[in-house]
Each structure stands twice: as structure tokens, then as C-alpha cells.
Length: 381
Image 1 (cartoon, rainbow, N blue to C red):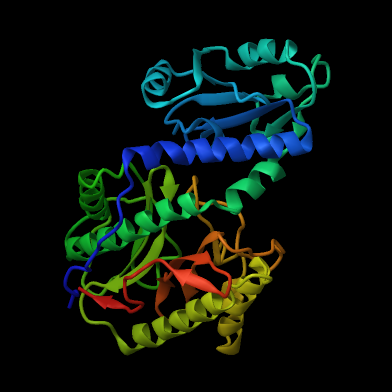
Image 2: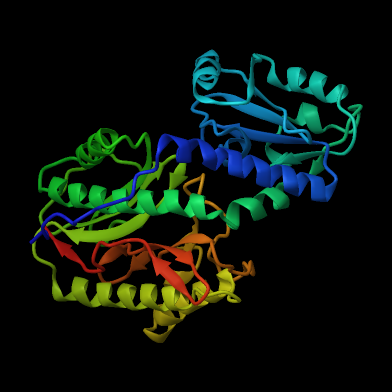
């Protein structure tokens, strides 16, 4: 049966606190620019990934392309090629000059032609090629790593927003469990969750899911596939609060779980607990991935930790739903207090199909603070 509602009492920031967070980020960015000798930083974003852009401008782009130029004196210009987004940015941002630029590359290029000093960009590889060609009168150094470092090593106020998002993710998963019924279509489950999140003032949620048995190899955006009795129903649910995403991964059964499903799920719970136990200062993303994968290897299922069956064993959380560092055995990024991660040993199990289980955590001085309150069990609905 589905448990009763999870008691949620998230702290709510004041309007002043909401305004202070982007100001803190801007000051931190300017300090990093000064230390690196950067006079102008160029930041790019689009409707899929806008975290670099948002870090400096506090604007969540929805369509088209956006480029910001941040000067060492703090002056910030935001160029958008969508009239709708430009109008929204003018209403939603503070201390940012908004420019509608249908030909965004040439408009930004004209600004950079007049700029002086050391120019840098993040992520440079996403910028229009016109801006990065060698024949330009300016050169943009790739400083993606600098921004990545700022976004991975979070301010306390950033993690406070992630904690609020994690609380709402718990609530939304409860809604998801009540939505799962044989005969309902996948998109109807997501519609119920989206309706709930919007009612809570949560404007964004990255969500994928799967339903079925051994035929299901992963999760996808929702389709018209109907839930059937006995299905494993998986979801990765990722709401955003004040621009910051937190994720939860859980699996339920439409009906009574079989012994094979319960045994398989126990393995995933063991792997998740091993991964979270590996989260501590001085460890690396690779250490966490290895701890998860070793559980599968001990059970003779090491094949299912490979890229053939699974993408990552977790990843960072923040202004993007799939932030750095990626939790993989070849990613040696060291963990430091304040980093926010989702640890999830999601993969295919040959006996029952694709299973997911994952919790959001923040790295502390001694280990990991788990942000998700939803029980780690195979729910029966």
C-alpha cells in the first residue's frame, strides 16, 4: 500500500533572501574574475542548458539563445534572440541590461570588438562559431572550468534552495504514487505531478519515467503507454526551486511485488547505501561510482554497470538538472563540503527489468547529508 502523506515543513525564504542569492553569486563570480585577471566574461545559455548564463544574470532562459557579458566592474549585459524571453527578462532581473538581438552572434561580437583586456567564455564550446573564429579582433579564452568550479562548490544559500527543492521532490513523488493505476497513460502520471508542482509555485521539473517489465531498458519522456498490473513503474523526478534542481529516483510496482522484484531491489538499495557511504571530503566522484558498481560486481552483475546499460551512477545538482561532476569511475573530481549530488545506481536488472533508486545529498565535513525523506523501498500501489 502507499504510505500516508510525508510531513513536509520546508523553510521558505523571504523576498530579501531570494534577491540576495543572485547577488552573492555575482560577487563570487567577480572575485574569481579578478583573481584570474579577466576583464570580461562571456556566458552562454539556451532553452535546454542555461546554468552558466543564470549564474550571472539570474535569468532562466526558456527559448532561443542567450549570451551575457559580465564586466570586471560588475556591469552585466544580457543578449537574447527571443522577444518573449527579452520581455520576461526585463521584468524578472535586477541590475542587468537587457538587449533583444535577433542576430545575437554579430551583436555580441560588436560589443566584444570594443572590449579591452583579457576576455573569457563559458562554456566556450557552445558559443556560435562566428564568435570563436581566429579571424576575430578579439580572442575568447575557455574558462568553463572556472565556472564549473563555482557551480560545484556551492554557497550555503544555494544548498538551502536545493534542500527546499528536495522537500518538494518528496511531496511530488507521493503524488506520483497516487497517480499510478492500471489503465492510466504515462503522460497522465506526469500531468498530475506537474499540476501539483505548479500549485506549489515550482515552475520547472525535469522528469522521465518507465513502465513495464523486462522489455523496458531505461526511462524516457512520458508516452501514451498504459500502466498494466504488475508493471515496474520508475521515475526520475527533478523539480527546481529558485532555479535550483533536486532529484529523487524511485521505483514502484502496480500491484504486488514478486519475490524476484524484491530481491533485485534489495541489490539496488545496497548499492545506493554503499555509494552514499563513499561520499565524504577527500573522496572523488570515481570513488562513489566504484562503491556502487562493486555491489553489482559482487552479485555477478558487473556487466550492467557499463555504458551499454547505464549512463552515470549519479551527478551534480544545481542550476541544471544534470550538473557536474558526473559520478563515473573515470571522473576524478574531488568531493568537498557544500557539493550537492544525486547518487543513483539506476540500471537494468536481467531478472526484472530497469530499476531506479537515488537520493539527493550534500557533502558535509564528515560525510553526506541525505536530503530525500522518501523511504528506500519498492513501493506497491
